[in-house]
Image (cartoon, rainbow, N blue to C red; front, top):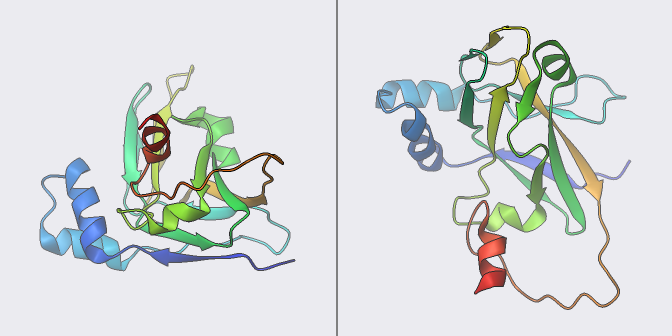
Length: 174
């Protein structure tokens, strides 16, 4: 298999800014503790296609609740590849845990975005059985799969990403 990517942590400052938006009560010690404990995504077995992304803190979602999680992770990958994020099979199967954008698409040029390519996960507990989802710090929550992609023969784009998530649509409109 070809080695085409590497996971890295975003800077402490980038992570702190993102975390305090969802945890305004988090002090510097808490932020540093969470950041220092971030684990880079990894495959569980040699035959696994997916890289498990681990929860940076405990997450509890009652039925219908959603959360936006800063993972503290970014992915540097070769051009011509995309990282796709999916819920972990067990969480989707047991709780109907879903990513709010269905499938997360991380482009290779997202690494250079203004937010350092910080990967976020927004998910909803869409249970129909009244189950509360509990994901413990360090537990796998989503899985990422690197895939090659192609472009059309007449593709002539020369635009470069400047912003973070959702910015490519804004560039096209401008």
